[in-house]
View (cartoon, rainbow over the protein chains, first blue to last red):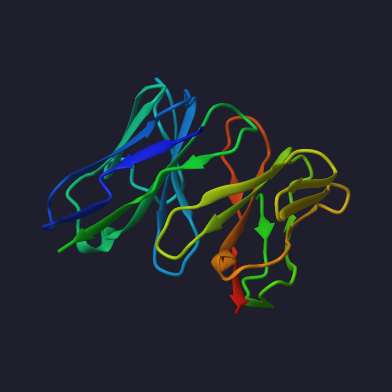
Length: 115
Length: 111
């Protein structure tokens, strides 16, 4: 149980392109979803917290107009990287949890490469 | 600011021995505690959760929690080379906040 599906796994695109990443909880309802970014050999960095039907809460230093998050249902959240540039290249990982104090379950991540 | 501290390692352990991973946290009000394993280039995978003081065992893994000392640990018995990974300690203070992660301990099991 507690499976989180993230799609796509890999994206390679040109600078200036917008990229959408989907995160789905397959066998549970996720009241909260989280988006992380991880650079090589570094720890997870929380970008934003998303509750179903509410605006996402962004961490300090994360541009909300660049990283658009939508959490339209209890099983789906999307992250759109708008006008991506090479410095946005990273490993983006979503996680979801069923409720407070519940563990977060992670998707497999999306490796984004901007040329 | 909530903090979770882990020794980054690398921690090198011979195959078959017990690997001991430690973690301390700053928020005394923390309510739930998790250990994740992350292989290089992969996303974290939940391996243990613990909510009350004492030990919790699951197969070769034992999580230990001491809230008075604000300390949580993970023991891996009969360590295997496949256990080589980065182990992330994560703490939840409850409510809407997500987990606070430590930076992880890099574990190497030597054949």
